[in-house]
Length: 149
Image (cartoon, rainbow, N blue to C red; front, side):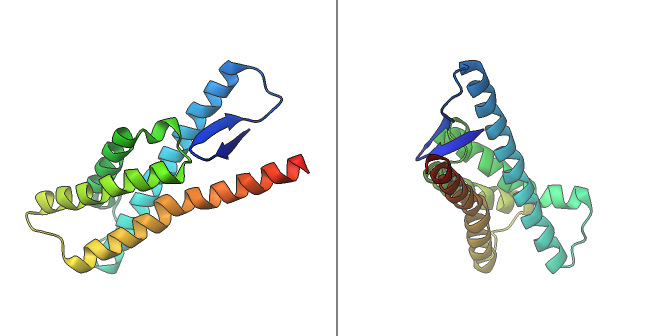
């Protein structure tokens, strides 16, 4: 069990096995990555459905890949893996990922994305990719407060 503390992941007091803490950190990073990629796939699926582009898995992946690649690049640059629940690192990742995803999308399609699409992408990814970490942080802070009371 882990709790988030600012930009770090800490093992809950009482667990003294450093190896289990490392495994838990890897597990949290893997789950965070799965959630992030799933949210980007949802973003692509919603967009494809709203624009009657079909909702085949290949089509959704083809639409999502620029943003997934941008997110992975941003996460690597910011070090999100080291603190996968850190809102500040997620914001930094988002700041790299969104422009990268928009540029890659434009290169893939051969045209610049419309401003309206960029705004929707900006808001959706901010609310989801950063937002779930805010919620997770609030829940772990509340849970930690409950255990110390």
